[in-house]
Length: 202
Length: 181
Image (cartoon, rainbow over all chains, first blue to last red; front, side):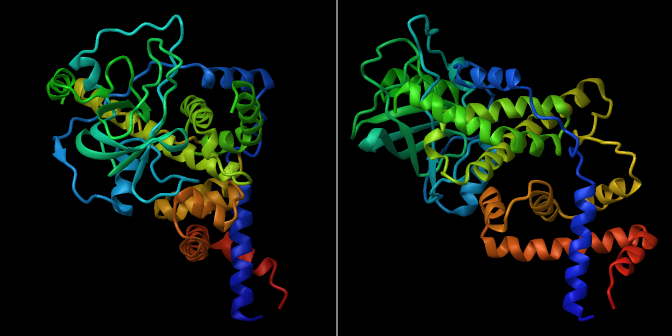
C-alpha cells in the first residue's frame, strides 16, 4: 500500500468518524406550520434595536481592504462582503422596515440615535437602478466602508417610517439599526439641526 | 419585482435553505439560540433576496447564518460578562450543545474537534456535516477555494491524529481494519 493510499484511507476514516458524530443526525424536519410562522415573522417589519458599542468618532481615510471589511463584518454585525456580494470595501445596507398607514414616528432624539449600529455622514454619488451609493465623509459610530449602498426609497409612499428617498449629490446623515436604515427623521439631509442631534448622540 | 413575486421567490428560497440552515445552527448552539438565529436569517433573506446567487442559495444562507450566529454569541457573551459583574458568579459557558448519542466514539470525535483551531474545525464541520463542496465552503468563509482545500486536507489529518492519540486502540484498529495490504 502506498503512502498516498494510506493517507486517503485515513482521510476517509476521519470523515466516517465525524459523520457518525453528527449531533443532529436524528433532527426531524421543521413542521410546515412553523416554517410558515417563521416566514411571516421575517416579512413583518420589526422595530428592535441593537445597542452598538461606544466608539470614538473618527474621520474616515483609506480604510478599504479585506481586513477592514472583515473587522466591520465582525464588529458591526453587518454582512459587508459576505457570500454573494462583490466585496471591494462596500457596506451594503437595507431599506428600513417599511412604514405603513398605521406606522407613527416618535420624536427624533439623541437617545434614539445613540443605539445606532452605524452612523455616518455621506454624499450620494449615484442613484442608478434603485440603488443609492454613498461616499462616506465622516463616521460617527460603527465600522463603515468608504462606500455604502442602500436601496432607494419610494417617493410615492409618504408615510411615517417609509424608506428615505435620497438625491444625487446631496449630503445626508445616515443611521442604522443593524444593517437597516433608520427612518423617522433619524436619517436625513445634513442640516444644522440633524447634525446637532448626531453630535449629541455620539 | 412585485410584492407577489418577491413573496413567491422568498417562499421558494426559504423552503430550499431552511433545513440546511437549521441543522447548521443546531449543530453549533443550543436550541433556543438556534431558533432565534434561524428567524434572523430568514429576515435577512427576505431583505436581501435580490443578492442571493442562483444555484448557491444554501452556502449563501449558511454564510448569513454564520454571521448572525457570531452576532448572537457576542451578544450572549456581553450579557454573560454583565451578569458575572453583577452577581459575581461564573457565567455559563458559551452554549454548545451536548448531544448524548450514547456512542462514546462520537463524544471522542467531538472532543478532538474542539481541540482543533476554530477555522480548521469549522471547515471540517462544513465539509462533513453540512456536506458543502470546497468552493461552497470558500463562499461561506470568504476564503479562496485553494486555501480551503489546503486547510481541509490538514484538518482531516490533525483530527485523525488527535483521535488516534486520545484512543490509540480505536485509531489503530480502524486503520488496520480496512487495510487491504
